[in-house]
Image (tube, rainbow, N blue to C red; front, side):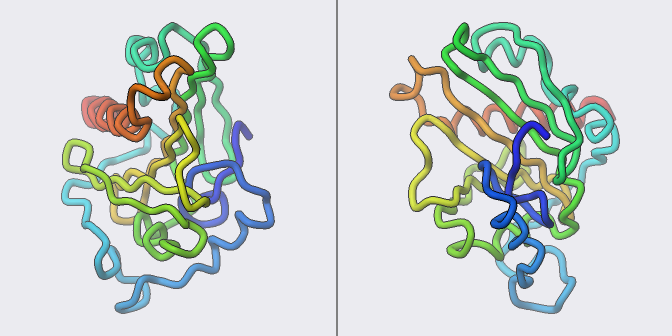
Length: 200
């Protein structure tokens, strides 16, 4: 497991959390409406669902080497694993690239997509902000604290009404005060959508 996230027990989230906290997601109630209805009331619908089969088989393939170089500042070897939330991949820049990193999880546990994320707004997710869609796909940035961690951003990208891709971004040290990390996360989300759809 490359990172423990809230999504590992049934839905999405973003940052590393104790296993005891992660388990709370599975008991989250639907967001009003009829039980099982997707998306729930107030949750944006995914108009063009994406087949994530290939992404689940190769989560590191959702971003190209050139894209990673652009985001992190250089070529780094991806690390993949099958974590409790689903297939995941991480690119860690380390000291050489000013501690920049990107992580993705193809959420294979939650079957309620962004509806589960919205259900935890103001509960587990103290910080919750719908963001500009990525190529038409709904995106939410969220965190367990009242404010986002400086230089970092966590997000949930809706690729189907019943599935999300979790994205985690940490800016290079020299960029942390110059660019909103959630703008960088949005750029990563756009790249992921383009790569997955291009492979279908």
